[in-house]
Length: 378
Image (cartoon, rainbow, N blue to C red; front, side):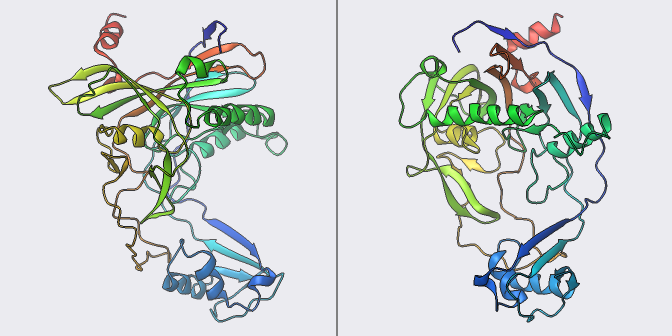
């Protein structure tokens, strides 16, 4: 990325449809394998999907008629399965937690769209959020623009993730080729991290994309620049089925370059810029907490790069009305409250190979005093 770069022209197009009160529910399909034949329905679901609901919850779902075998409703949990049978579990529609629905397009061409994502909106379906996501709004927009072509052409899809509480720039691909190449850009950046002591500029000569974030952290960061190369791994954690990402010496390599922009000693916080040179989940939150400066308002990560509570043995067998586990009472990664913004991306365009810079407008609390003054003078 040594060629001159060009600032992409900013757009101010917004879109979004209000969320329905209830989503459409979900259907989960399975085909019984030889290893699962002769199991009962309750044994199959309580074993294979134990993170979805406790035993009593699955019994409730079966007795409610939410499971079919080869198209027929089954209500007897002791029904024996046969190899090759098709099982379908219908997760009933539910009201998802509140989430914003407006999105801003800040760059668009024939290959990709760059969005300014608001805090509180999940990027891809997961957990309680199956409909209230960026992906759904992109699909609805594409359907509205080209209703007759949707069965033939793919709609734009995000090529990376931002945490639900993180705002800012999100790249989305408009074609299969663009999705493949942009995904490779992000993967390539992570692959160059592995105990490397290279600087940002050195890494920039081989990488196709650079990502810059703004964050507000607790305490006063003394050094003007800090490189954090703490590995990130996974530990068991209540309410997070696949485990929680934390700072861990046995984890995968990760590198973040932190630069102080302003220190506010009266409020005991520091405004920082972070360039991430790998793409581990929650990397910035974990790395800043690891060096003793968690994001201001972060409900989950504390000094050291781990959660406030790490009771991995905690088990709650109570269940909600739909049979699933109750919403976790302890903080989880999707909880909001912190100030983290994906501010800028510099990338080599996948078609023209031209270097472009795309920026998402900064929230007021993540601007320097000078930036605030400059905006006031316009």
